Length: 363
Ligand SMILES: [Fe+2]
Ligand SMILES: [Fe+2]
Image (cartoon, rainbow, N blue to C red):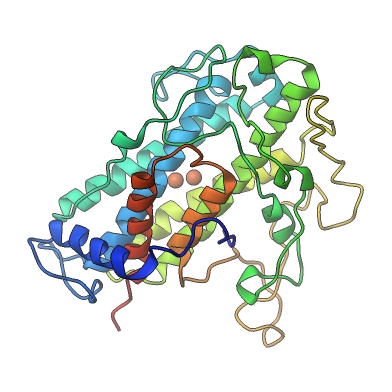
C-alpha cells in the first residue's frame, strides 16, 4: 500500500481534478463541482465526495474481481456461483500444498469481490450517481494454460513483482507505515523480478518446483491484494460523510480483512523450494525469528498515531487517509497487475483515485 514509486504524480492535480469534477458533474444533474467535490449533493443526498469514494472503491473491486476470476478459473472451484474456466489440475494441486481448502477459499474470495463492485455500483445508481464500468479495458490476454477462459482481462497475473512486506509489517511490534517505517519482504526474491502467479501455458506445469513456485507466488499475492483492501476501506472511511455510506465502507472493509487473515495464514505454508528455472527462492520463514514466524498471524501490537505517546495496540496498518486511493493504484501498478494496459486505462483509474482523494468530510 505504501509504495508510490511507479506512477508518476504527473497527472495528479490539475487535469485529473478537472476531469474528476466533470465526471462527478455527469452524475449530479450538471452541478459544477470543480474545487468543491465534497460539498455538492447528488439528487438523493450523498455528497459528490462520497460518490467519488464509492466510485473508486467500485473500480478497485472490479479490478480485484478480474484478478480473482483468473485465479478461480485455474485453481478455484468453478460452479454456478463463480462460473468460468474448467480448472487446471496440476496448478490446483500445487496450490493445495498451502492448504487443502485453497480452491474453496479462492472461489469464495472471487464471489465476494463480484458482490462488492456489483453492490457499490447498484448503490451509486440508487442515489442518481454514475457507477463504474471498466469493460472496455478488458484487453489483456488470458493464460493459455488448460482451464483458463480465452477472454480479455483487466489485470495481468503473469509478470508480478509481489511485495511481501505485509507479512513482516503485521508482525512488527514497533513499526507502523503511517509513522514512516519500512519493512523487510518475507520473500525477497519476489521483489527481484517479474514472476507468474498462474501458469502462462501448459509449459509452466513442469518441472514440479517451477509450478510450486508459481502457486507459492499466488499464495503470497493473495495476501498482498487483500492486505491492500484491508487498509483501503478504513483509510477512505475517514473522509466519508453520509452515515449509510460509512456503513457500507465499515461493512465491506472487514471482509477484506477476513480474506487477508486467511491468506497470510496460508502463505506461511508455502513449501520451501527454489524454482529451478529462475532461482526464485521461498525460504523457511520459521528460521529467522518473530518477524516472519508463520503462526504469528494475529496483528502484533504496535505504535499508533504518535510514536511513544500511547501504549502499543493491535491495529490495521496503514490507515492514513491522505492520498490513500492513489496509493492503492500505485501499489497495484508496482505489483505488475497493469502491465500491458493502455494509457487511457491509467488515466481513468488515476482520475477516479484523484477524485476519491479530493473528497473531504464536512464538519
Ligand atoms: Fe473486495
Ligand atoms: Fe478483496
